[in-house]
Amino acid sequence: MSKNPVGAVLAVMAMLGFMATVILLGFVRVEIPDANRDFFNLGFGALISITTMGVQFFLGSSKSSADKTEAAVASSAVKDQTINNLTAPPKQ
Image (tube, rainbow, N blue to C red; front, side, top):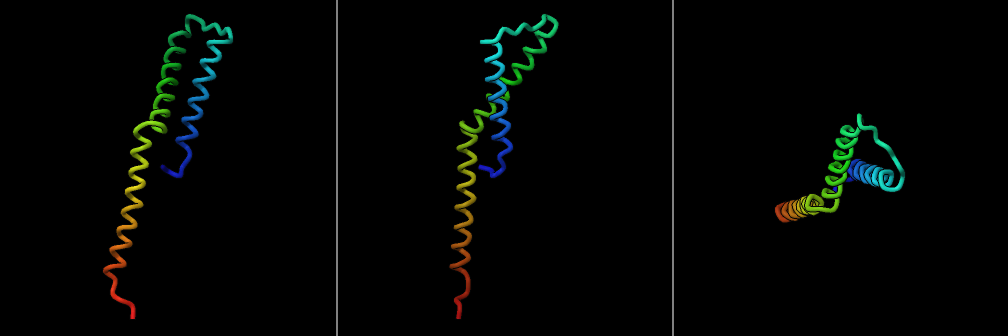
């Protein structure tokens, strides 16, 4: 996994935004005017999509794929170092 935490921070922010929206709609009486209902539905659908993508990346197959890639790079570096040690001329 990348050392850059920006993706994780954005995914957490999307999840918190989604949960806050659900709580506001479920427990607090919020009236959405008819003129803004379509706009709200589009925004809420986009928030659901962003949250789903974040969860899928950090908990789904993309995470295991990134872990495998990281392991392969580390394995390749060890292999290259071993080959260099074997092919280096002997020290006198």
